[in-house]
Image (cartoon, rainbow, N blue to C red):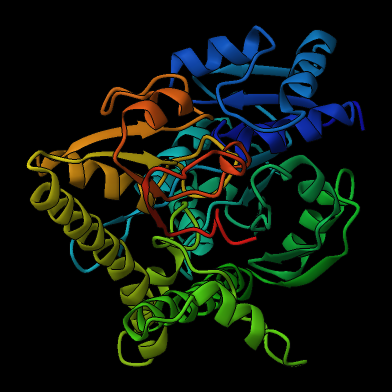
Length: 402
């Protein structure tokens, strides 16, 4: 095991924890990131993201010499690609340019017998495209390397545990590639490894997040209906969930993150005639942020009419989910930025981020001293016991739902 060498392309929210977990098993990992600051931070045994227990593991791996970061790849036995896959344009076309760039970076370093695994959430057929790019640049490797797809299933705040213990779907472009990938993951994953083909594994990741998006959309749509009907949506969901076969999720200001807010569009783009429910769910969850903005504006307008001055609005939370620092596709961030762009008096509170260029961050106590309206957007633990007795409170994430 110690003789195996792995290259990890991408050292972000998934790449770095995965690299650290592998290196923690005594395997040599050469991590690659295009950001020199990220590389320098990791090589100092530190981390550039917030994730429990990760910094200690990275520090240990670096000290042991099992983890090294660089801006360029090296020769290895296994190459993992874990880079972003956003969408682009108004039609939400999947953008696999980061995947292509990472794949082309490793091509000069490939040797016969290497295993290349894509972990990035990708449209169906992307693993096969990597094979095509490799074949075009290195035709002598045709049929002599192994290609597979294996998506992660992790929850921020529990990434290290879930990377090691969750079950995984692993699909190669052929059976031998699948077997090679399963053998590799079995070295550091305790969860059951399910063999399939690359296309099914790619679609599996998209389906998992689309399923969650649809269920969240039901809760968000219900929250807007309940508000119009004068019903407390939190109580309504609590009571409805007493049914033995009902499990409604909790509503929020929208849906964020690089998975649930993005992945369903990959299916919608490629299957436009068939993916009607998936598209509708995406539209509902995107609209929820717009709905929240209008509610806040209306509350601020009513305050100004009653008090002859502009309301100071304190928005609590900027990340896309509680108790992390990740703001990718965050509806809370979108809401706060839109309010600020509309020249409202807005202050932002985000206990998991120290500085943010786009907005001035204030402490909880400072926000409570100055704010007239408190808008709860993310259910951080730090917000659970704050005193909002003298504020106009708009709770869109259930902080006050005991």
